[in-house]
Length: 159
Image 1 (cartoon, rainbow, N blue to C red):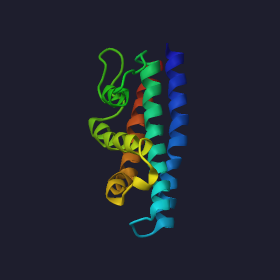
Image 2 (spheres, helix red, strand yellow):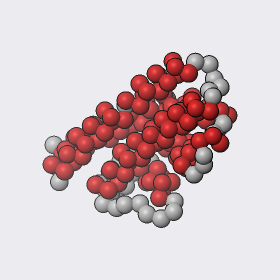
Image 3 (cartoon, rainbow, N blue to C red):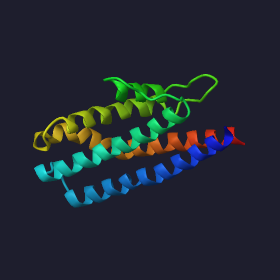
């Protein structure tokens, strides 16, 4: 079991390295775009970045649930159930993977992901896009901090 926990810790560390690249992409995008509101083309790009941001966070959480909890979320509300699951501890198995605060922030991105995937990009509006875009750097920092803490737990349990 300890080898599996170490392997998961290594996988999560690698996934965080990839995920943290979104942070730089957001900084670069803010420099390129300048003062909001962005035009339609820019909103397409920003929406895609936010979609990738959520996808990366969800993928990391899903990996934990599959490998530690030994289950895969199913059903029409599995995205919401995943966030709920990783924000709570499972007694005698694992602590919460992310904090309640991070889970609340993540909900905003889950909702945006749904909107982005199920609508045309030209339907994006700056009032809808601005809050998750503005909060993205904070979200990324909180998520990385939570996952790094969980990685420390995995390493502690494997020794």
